[in-house]
Amino acid sequence: MGGRRLADAATLDASLFRLREAVQLAADVGAAHLVVPAGYVPPAGDAENASVRATLAEAARALGDVSASARVRVCWLGGSEPPEVLAEFLNGVDSGGILEVDLNPARTSCAASIRSRRCMCYPLG
Image (cartoon, rainbow, N blue to C red; front, top):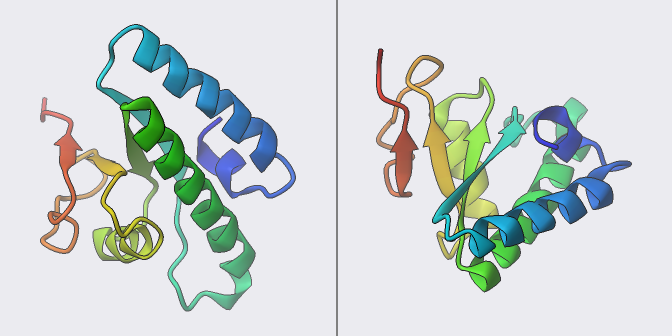
């Protein structure tokens, strides 16, 4: 469900349906977090990928709503975008800070711009 599927408007409803089920399952088993591999978020000024960014924003808002109601924290696993781009995106669509960020230090670093959000980082090695 993650990756580019969240960026595809044609499959977003089906992906969000499955993610709602996954969040509910996580809640049922008492899990505190659910990592969602959301994929690459294009920069705000990238006109060529504006529809991708808009679809991801819709997905992020929906996941924030589901996360808040189910009491399971959704951790947004970004793609290869710079941490500043991911921070700007999430701060724009999730002003309440419901979504967390799952950062893999092998792909990116916990930059100061994104540390304002709760981060779950994979351990090195």
